[in-house]
Image 1: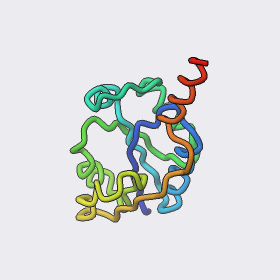
Image 2: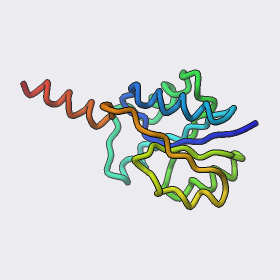
Image 3: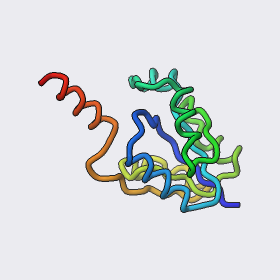
Length: 132
């Protein structure tokens, strides 16, 4: 069985997230999604709209996702790859090169982002609509 892992906050789920998950799943048989927990988001200066538990529930309902785990710090990636016997580590290409250190443990793939959509864009667009 070929295992794939990806990481993210996955707040305000959108088609870009689904595209990433679908393409990541196509790289193997079993997809693990590590989502930033609320404490880790706070450390990064981010505030998700949905709680960790809500985001976990949403992701668990997506057919491409086999397992959802918490991401609690930047350093856990190699530990996760080893613990879950991961073969492929996947991130969006906006992170290109940032996780090459994981290549020592498994393949690393940077997938292209879906053009024209992001959680940041959604939040910005909603704010603009409210201010009209």
